[in-house]
Amino acid sequence: MEPLKKFQAHSVETKVQQILQEQLKDVKYDDKLFSHLSLELSDRILSTVKEFGYHRYKFIIKVLFIQKTGQAINIASRWIWDVAWDSWVEAKHETESYVALALVFALYCE
Image (tube, rainbow, N blue to C red; front, side, top):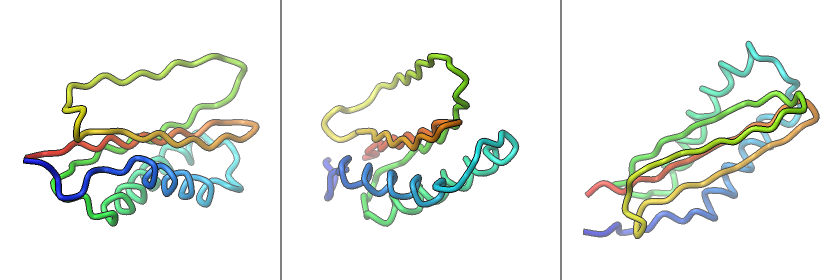
């Protein structure tokens, strides 16, 4: 079986980037605020991605806030999936004090 509509990473990435820019344009770094905001952003991104109508896809949304303190950071994800149908998207919003990173994993379920 294959999906009626294959996951279009570019259109989803554009929309997720737009959400990050709109929601975080005037936000300063606050670790207490970010724990709640990451949940809100994840929910908003998930509902937006579902509006694209990718039937039989399951989505995993991860939103990270990283304070800029002069450090280096590496973020890695590992998975087993079908490269023909499954995909992922990354969107980033950067300010002077933090980086917000949103990851969307799209998994096709038969």
